[in-house]
Amino acid sequence: MEVCYQLPVLPLDRPVPKHVLSRRGAISFSSSSSLFGAPDPRQLSQRRGAISYDSSDQTALYIRMLGACVVFKELFERDVRVRSQVGFEPERRSSHPYLRIDFRTLHTRLGYGSSSDGSGTERRVHRLLSFQRYLHSSRLLRGISQQIPLHILDEDYNGQAQCMLEKVGNWNFDIFLFDRLTNGNSLVTLTFHLLNKYGLVELFQLDMVKLWRFLVMVQEDYHNDNPYHNAVHAADVTQAMYCFLQEPMLAKSLTSYDILLGLLAAATHDLGHPGVNQPFLIKTDHYLATLYRNTSVLENHHWKSAVGLLRETRLFSHLPAEDSLNMERELGSLILATDISRQNDYLSRFRMHLDKENLCLSNASHRHFVLQMALKCADICNPCRPWELSKQWSERVTEEFFQQGDIEKKHKLEVSPLCDREANTIGNIQIGFMSYVVEPLFAEWARFSDSRLSQTMLGHMGLNKASWGGLQQEQTAVSEEAGPSATDAENAVAGGSSSKEIPQGSLES
Image (cartoon, rainbow, N blue to C red; front, top):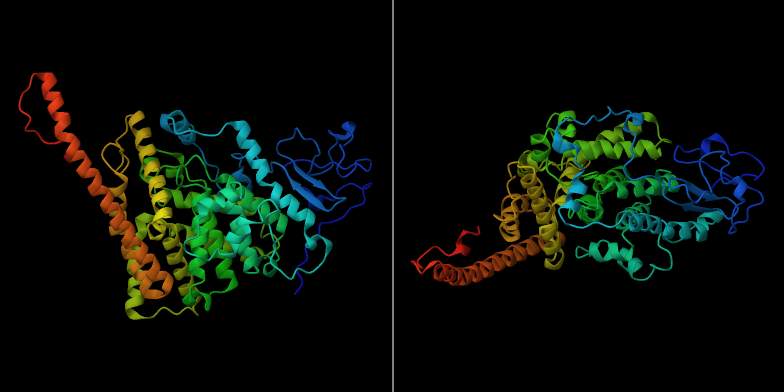
């Protein structure tokens, strides 16, 4: 079957039809403009549609029709979203003083670092150049059938990054390395590659430009100031979801629709995460907590944000309205399943199905439930990765907890559990998380899918738990050795009272 996507080629002396209009810029064509030469300055202000040659326009979409070359340049401003235009109730901020603060700005003020505005803009522009070169050289644009998968990386990255994509189903896939090789574009590159790998772009007749624009907007809506809940985490979850979709129990049963939903849910499951948890939003009277009535606040926000981008980019506008709405609802059902506060409900239901052996994957509702469990596993699979990867994720998520605790201390709020960097360590947080959350879930998943991957994940989790335990013992031993000497020094300065006191290190935990 041929895969063919062709941009409309228009006479240069005719205005652009309305169907190519976009609300993100303006278009300007000049028959006197060469493909690579500078446009006529007199026409920089001339607007006919949705795209502009004006390089000072930071929100314009650039298209040069002569070479069938599409160049994306700053498709959108990162935080400008008109949700009311896509059917959602406008989000109104409360009057609580803490909620007028941008949490990302707080992180920066507290000294956790952020890139400058100039470097951030340059980074976002550079991310889009690979797709520009791909479109320019793609045989698809010449109407020639592709016999090999689409390549979305240009020659600068086709080496190591392409080799990694060929092994995207390996459990030891290093998403941090892949993010560096793709110049911070891991979520877009990986998700696009997987959708194409399954043939979903062709099967669902997805407009490649709309799809790419949607993925770029998704990636940009993740807050990269968050140590953990950022676009790299979303890419990691998407890669893990792909590994689960490849499991024999699922690969032979899931439909293309199920796979599309699963990959999109993984890519958007933490969209717009503010870097603080639900109890923080509730106790500070955040407008999101009010909007979603203190129930699955973050997950509802992720879902509605994803649906907003789907509608804004009109990715599924060619589908019947009923099918599009059903897809949005089922996408929400998958994302809402990642609410950790409902972990026991899903786990009990999963265990009951396994005990009764009544999971029937030919049943659409049962397949959807298994997708929910797969996404839950993918979301918290970091302890099941190899130690080199798992340790990095553990440090990142703990730092995000501690940053929330710092914000709470700064504003004299009660510090949330696990968020006090003076009372908790990475090791004790991770050991508790593995024991009470991860192990029960992955033990049941291994019952469902008794595969090599399942045993590998359980093996890594056991080794990682032991490693954290060993590090905890070492830290305790060092603290106990340093404690008495520090106490003796203090006593000597104070005049030499009794040195038989509790070592300071024993109070660490």
